[in-house]
Amino acid sequence: MKKYITAVIALAVLSCLPACTGDFDALNENPNAPTGVATSLMLPKVQQDLVNTIVGESWGIGNIVIQHTSKNQFVNEDRYLWGELNSIWNTTYANARHIRNIMAQSEAQGQNNYLGIALVLKSWMFSLCTDAYGDIPYTDATKAREGVNQPKYDTQEAVYQGILADLSRANSILGTTGEVVAGDLIFAGDVKKWKKLANALRIRALMRISTKRNVSADLKAILDNPVQNPIMEGNADNATYRYLATSPDQFPLFTARIGSFNEFRASKTLLDVLVALGDKRLEIFFRPTPATESAAAPVYAGLPNGLSDVDALTFNGGPQNQSRIGSLFYENAVTPQGLNTARGVIMTYAELSFLLAEAAEKGLISGGAEAHYLNGVRASMQYYGITATDAYLGQPQVAYLGTQQEKLSKIGTQKWIALFYMGLEAWFDWRRTRIPALKPGPSNQNSDRIPVRFIYPISEQALNSTSYQAAVQRQGADNINTRMWIIK
Image 1 (cartoon, one colour):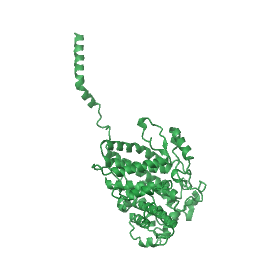
Image 2 (tube, rainbow, N blue to C red; image 1 turned 30 degrees about the horizontal axis):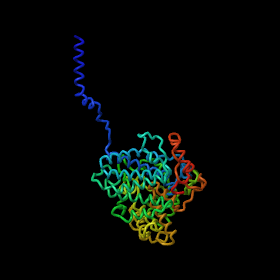
Image 3 (cartoon, rainbow, N blue to C red; image 1 turned 135 degrees about the horizontal axis):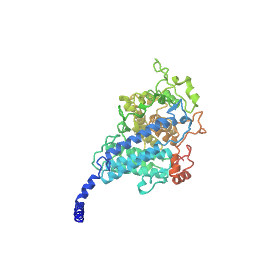
């Protein structure tokens, strides 16, 4: 009898298995653990990560090396005692996976607008990385799922070829599908502005490699067809990340300790240029010395770069007589004016104008060098709310007059000013042009040389040793003075 009952139960269980399979699958699905993420949710996180990283590196090292700011305490950065500077590297490769996922998802769903935006972000991200380090993992960078755990380093030349190809593709596909872009913190889904940025970045990249090959035809191909290849036309097209007045997405410096903020002072190099030109941007970038801030005739005084700890702290009588960085980049960053000033910058119309002025002056594109130059100066001034520019532009030191070298020097100097606290672009561009003629500080620890790159992360030597060694063998010693391909 017992055997009979057991057999009946077994048959009953077996007979229900096909019908119950679906129920078991449903029970094994966790509704609180999604297996996919919408593109509109991945996009803002990538944008925020990239922008916050470049804002941080700009403050900590970029403004220092290009002599926009200097330090009166803990002056290692100013003396070129650089260790690892890994935030750009880490952010690039952490977000490369997200970019790849956005691209794959967008292609699968036929969403060219999201795909084009991802290509632009990928291009900007890898351009930052290669400009900072030189040869980098690029082709193999996101192939861990395919078993590539030690990616090879591509040459910088190959990386730039890939960047230019991706930007060209982005320009060609943006706007060819109809999906509404959500989650875009840069242009709020304005696809036309992403096309303009793609082409502006193409022009930046072409000028970056213009000492390595003739880029005239490439530039003309972009500029001769504005319908197909639109470019930025004014400050309304600036690619910037606007921070919020309230937590949690405020300008990163807003929450910094005042002691840490006050270690940074106006570089005498930049401040003296602004004073000599009567440049109103002086009052945005810097403050009068603490000792004279409330005086009827406030004084602006810069601190030379590259002094020893003691000399930096005591220069000009001490911190009370050294101009601090402007309040719009710190305690007033959350005010209406601060929100318009303290932004995360990818690229601006002013920078594009200076690039076009240089290209025209060198004969790489046809005419218009002076117009582009004036557009650049005016756009930079207007970015900070300064509209009265005619008298400034009429000064002999600013007016577009002189020999070709004098004109190129004016373009480079005004571009250097305009790039204040806008990432590492001022440094990247200075390495190519050497304008203005910066000099290392008297107590520098790098044999009177301004660094031209970051060293690779030490972790690469342990985790990706073969590829790392191949890159060093090809590029040169892994130190801050080795010239990468674009500046050799």
